[in-house]
Image (tube, rainbow, N blue to C red; front, top):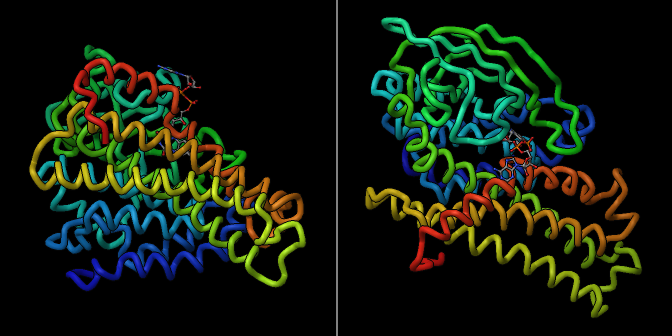
Length: 391
Ligand SMILES: Cc1cc2nc3c(=O)[nH]c(=O)nc-3n(C[C@H](O)[C@H](O)[C@H](O)COP(=O)(O)OP(=O)(O)OC[C@H]3O[C@@H](n4cnc5c(N)ncnc54)[C@H](O)[C@@H]3O)c2cc1C
């Protein structure tokens, strides 16, 4: 799939897949199983290569399309959408920071459907993105990876991994390097399962990774993962997650509104009731705020990329704010939908509108890169942005 027509079609393809994924979502959640069929559909549709340049066989889409596709997929199945969004985040890092030889080999594989997983979390340092404990060992041509990874979304199904590690045994924790490994270059052993409150279809269990890769697999400058993170991983991560969470909450509201408008609605959900209207307005307000801020941040990052300018302090604040606001408001919106829908429609697992699954899934949003960590970072950055350049 290449060319402009494909780019224009990406969001409508995602809209079609949304219905298919929605039909499978309850089973994926109930069995906590990786949505392999959904990944195969994404692969067939060319969506794993959405960010791969057309010259390498991909779609070469922009960030607005990434956000729109994530939103559509998440309205069907949030686990699948998150798997896809995190893969897309890895692809962006390879596109922007991979060595020419790595890009030449890996990007066509991604366009054909290779799925890339992310390894940043570590037992000792927890979620902190910009540091690492385990160190790479260097030989003349290769780097050796030995890494314990407690949370790897879709790790057992991945074709490749982007891994953060301390650059060498003598480096400090901040001298972190991002390195790519093909699945065949690693010995993998599972260390934990994934039986969680929500996001049960992401199969994010722990893995031990061990193997060697050529030095050309280092992504960005050795020891300077921070540059890759600020330019690529954080923007794509926060935009992708926010788009997914908003897509789920938006899809839930659409289903709820459909129910309120239907003659089959329960008598408590009378659309002429001012209480129902006020509650709908609060939910809508939550989603409007996230949507407006998401679009604003997508525009800001897109403009910076087009101009070739780095994302400065205020842009980093906006990206962190996006993640926290989206996590809080989408969860609150679905919580409010449960309250409005009541016990039968809102709380039961067998409800026609799966609000209880959405609520469990969205509870992960403030944990999936801890809001606390981001707020501490934003507070520090605020002191450095004395002009207070708001989004
Ligand atoms: C659905 C899902 C998928 C994921 N997929 C992946 C994946 O594919 N790859 C991967 O590597 N990781 C993945 N993660 C892990 C994720 O990126 C975070 O690392 C993880 O959610 C953080 O877990 P934590 O709360 O235990 O750890 P931490 O972030 O270490 O936080 C622990 C607690 O300490 C507090 N805390 C710690 N330090 C600070 C600080 N400096 N300031 C303020 N508060 C602090 C936080 O409030 C938090 O409550 C995933 C997580 C989820 C939920």
